Length: 41
Image (cartoon, rainbow, N blue to C red; front, side):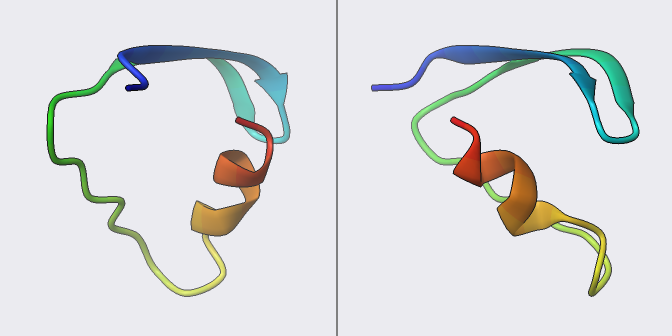
């Protein structure tokens, strides 16, 4: 199971650390790039 992810220098994200639980939901406007970051994982 994926427990955390750290993103540095990806498109508009300079530095981001996220911890995940058992259930996670990505929410954002259309065209905001939700599928884009998950393709890199």
